[in-house]
Length: 87
Image (cartoon, rainbow, N blue to C red; front, side, top):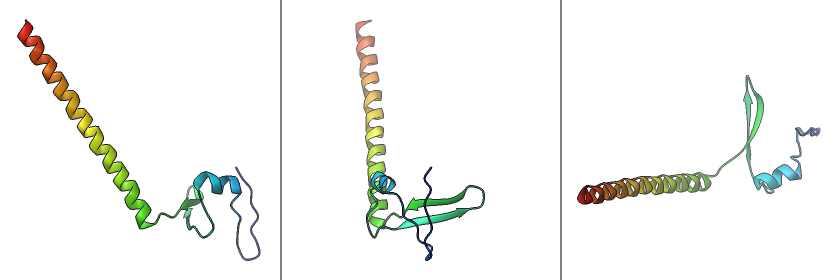
């Protein structure tokens, strides 16, 4: 938990350790959500380019996982064929 002051213009300063943790730099944007049950949340604003980068990475990971699953199935099938030939 971090406590910050609100200036007379409604500004707050996000502590440097939090800015460093999330890689926030001068001029970056954040989203402020006023949730009725959970209170105020501050989230990073993601540019379209950053969102696309994240989606591409996740799609790539899913493709690799599918290829890996398929290869495991192929190996099991090959093992079964070899087992059947020897017995």
